[in-house]
Image 1 (cartoon, rainbow, N blue to C red):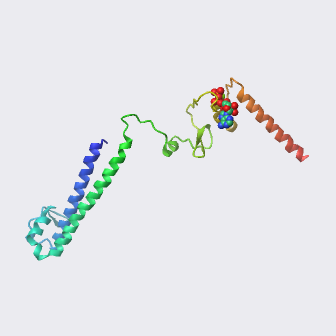
Image 2: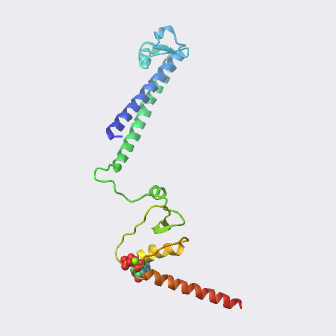
Image 3: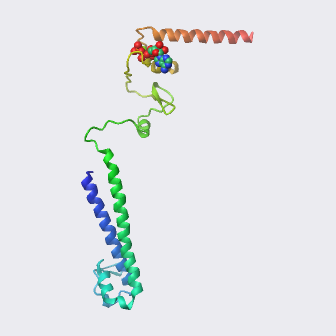
Length: 205
Ligand SMILES: Nc1ncnc2c1ncn2[C@@H]1O[C@H](COP(=O)(O)OP(=O)(O)OP(=O)(O)O)[C@@H](O)[C@H]1O
Ligand SMILES: [Mg+2]
């Protein structure tokens, strides 16, 4: 929705609130007077009740105020409450519209991910390819899509993403390890595991 449409919509809502309060006040005063014939002809009848034009309250107020000042005071208060509620809604609407300004994408829509984006992308899984960390949690991809990590040389792609992924990978994997770094790492892990195995079997003997 464009800001102009939102503004027109809000103006319409405020006008409706004011008109509704006036109508309720008119209905209240007419009810107190038991829909007397002196109030004039109703606009229409709904569910057996005469319904008057919303502004009739002010005509009756002008003509009959001395006869029942308290009734018109209450009716006037009901009508005025519409003005107060309408003003409140208008202020809330303008604050809301001011906040919408940050969603303007005239100069581009790129932004950092928020919590809901991370959840929507299903990156908080406990398995899959390691992508990084966020708020003390690992971001992991576990889906049929392709994953590409792009970062400067020696920035930690291997130690940060590839090795943790392979250490936790339960399926098969084909590893194109040009520099042999992953082989060395896995060899080191293998030797450590063998040492642990040997020491545990030695302590049992
Ligand atoms: N967070 C870290 N703490 C300590 N050392 C790190 C860290 N990240 C990377 N290193 C060290 O920096 C070097 C490069 O790391 P790594 O091989 O993971 O980078 P790379 O991005 O895979 O590099 P390349 O582009 O050459 O493949 C390694 O010696 C690694 O031990
Ligand atoms: Mg590397």
